[in-house]
Picture (cartoon, rainbow, N blue to C red):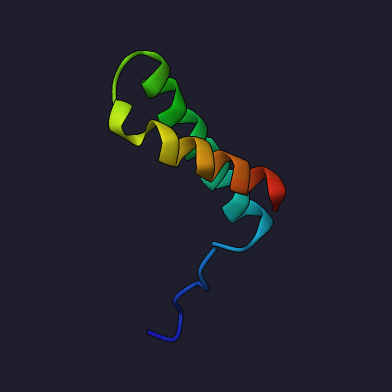
Length: 51
């Protein structure tokens, strides 16, 4: 198991991945889906912009 790659979160690539997923989920909110996640996704988006 020593060949496992280190976690990507916290790296520039991890931040890009998080931002991509967040944007995709926010798009679903704009289409009327996942409305219960709206505020949490907006908060997550703001946190990502501050990193």
